[in-house]
Amino acid sequence: MRKLLFITFATLGVLLSAGVSANAADKAAVGYLYTTLNGEGENAVVRFSRYKNGTIGDETAFWTGSKGGANRGAGGDAFGDFDSQNAINIIDNYLLAVNAGGHDVTVFSINHASGNLKKIANVASGGERPVTITSQPVAGSNSKYWVVVGNQWNNPNVQKGGAGEPAIERYPNDAFIKNGHKSKVAARNIALFSFDTKTGALILKSVIDSYTGTNGGPTAVDFSPNGKSLAVATWGIAHFGTATPSLKEQKPSRVYVYDFNAKTGATGNRRFYEEAGIAGSIGMDWAPNSVNLLVTNFNLTVEKRDHSVTVLGVSADSVSKVQNFGTGDGAGDVDEACWMLVNPAGDKAYASSFGTNVISVFDLDKRGRLKKIGRGKETVNAARAKGTPAGDTKDMFIVDKDFYVIGAYQTYTLSHYSIKANGTLKLVKQYDVDTATEDSGPGTYNFLGLAGYSIN
Image 1: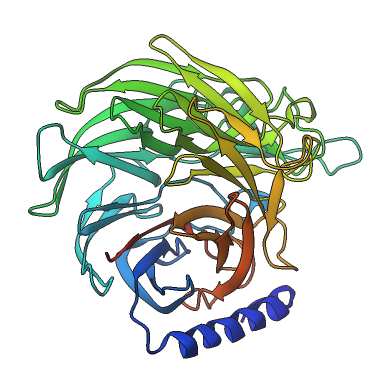
Image 2 (image 1 turned 135 degrees about the vertical axis):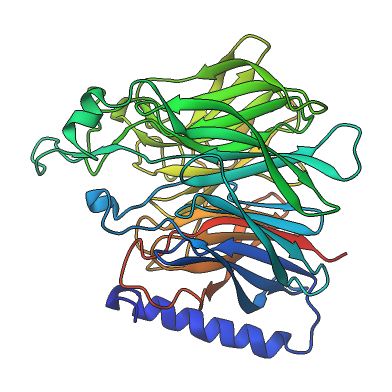
């Protein structure tokens, strides 16, 4: 049973989902949505039918035979939470999902009409704790793709310790935070695979790069729209559970960019951006111009709270900051913006905030620059349902005039919004993910990824 904190919220979800089933019983699905449980036991991909009016129903779980990555006993007050974007990748009639605790990737075939999945294989990820996956076609091929998997390994962090707060805590321990793993960790890497849509075979080709223990592991991997660049966002070492994150305890996150040859799979010309006071670059999406990267940043020092979103310009020899913004109700918020999504038209960008459970909306111009929607310096925000506990909102997905976001860490929900003409959002319904029923509080599940497709 869920904690009392969620009884009213969960009851609302049950009533709404029952209404969806009744109204949609005689309607054909127009598409499907998928997320992963990423619980403490076996991982599952959960499918939802999507109907013409944007409502969802017909929830079905497809088990991977591998382990999720949730672990409530890890990391003190973090209850094992770790973050990433792009944990599910749909290629033609296949779905690839990472299993963070099983250190592998499950390949499913998709019945395009029904949305049902059939497991083909679990393939070792090339490292430990795979959390993010991206793909693009092999140049000149009609059936082959390059796939990159980001293996996070772990996310060391520091908690508390500010004035008037409990004593500082360092995870996994003081020695690691001070001196540990300054050299590269083989299991914390990005790995290159080939994928064949004729056979469903996912084959490891090489490890592109590995990362040190003190500069954080991958949180998101993403090919540029033109296929010529591969971007990797990383954790640093965050200092949270405090009103005053310390530069002495934090280590900055990085955003790496590599040149990529879509014919051979070769990478090179590694460059990166980092900034003191930003310790967790989690969400990331390219602007359509393949030049600018839009990045959401968790765990900011007081001086950098107007850096919840950064726009990075990518050139042949550098990655540099072009713009920065606060999200939520203002630049001073401890908002914890963590996920970034550009809409299919390429003219709007959405940042979802884990801490305050809001989605901030921006205009995106053809130069790849952002502009806040709203009066003055305020960003327009769409809230989750009333009563949503702080620390819940993660991945987003857009299809047609509908916007979806997962309550990934506490409420275990999927929220549906309608998209207005100016790109702002209106909450329509909230759906309880019934497969996630055996929880006893935060971190029992840690949903990863949200993806989908339309049938026609």
